[in-house]
Image (tube, rainbow, N blue to C red):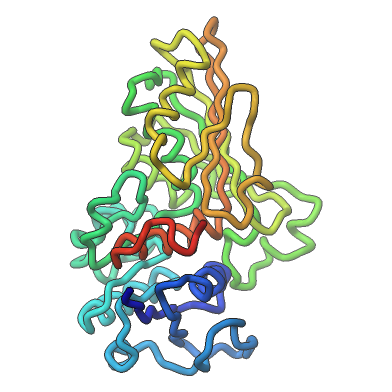
Length: 336
């Protein structure tokens, strides 16, 4: 079997560090750490990586290190700067930022409040949610890793839209709760210990930048979705509770059967039996998305709960899943 060198830019952040953890135990790749900017904190060398973390992220490094693929665990502006260089040097790119998730520069500017500086790549980027985009990912040069909230939301909502069992006129409410690592490692008053501990707060109400990903993948309109992100005082994990009015469903079993049929052959989606609901502890440090359902047939009220680890299925684990597809490995390699 052929092994590959893969680069990691942004390995000092939470998602990047998770990538290092996963790739150092992956049997088919050797991670190469790439620096983009000087880090004044001089964090220790990640455990399990043989070479020193001193290589600059340049096209020359791609060629010298024979990198088949480069992960960009970087802010969106850095990804827009580096992605064209890495692609031109011959490496595939998996970007963990929001830089290439949306289809046009205008939509990006609206939700991210900044201009897109590499709009020519948006048409080439493939949205990297394997459960829905597997065939395209395998052929892609540029893969845009989904956001953590949209991963949990789309895996729960899209099968329902496809099955036509949501009364869309009544709207869909998605109540998302996330651990603090979802905000990244950059220092911020809002994510400091004294602000987060013993607290629970909503943020980016009605204008969270992950909303257009949910609309794009699930095929719903903005007016049909109310999404609220909330910060809870734990380090990692996302739990989303999704409320809607059902139609053409006579039992909770029929609702559950939609998920059983859709995800029967998906290695990283686990559907809970009736009466059980997923929680964050059950998915921590894994690449699973766990889904549970509840339906009151008399009123049509329905609830779906979707849980993931925001740093794994919501970031680094899904990126490795995408890498496996892009490089022709088993999709579960290094993740199960």
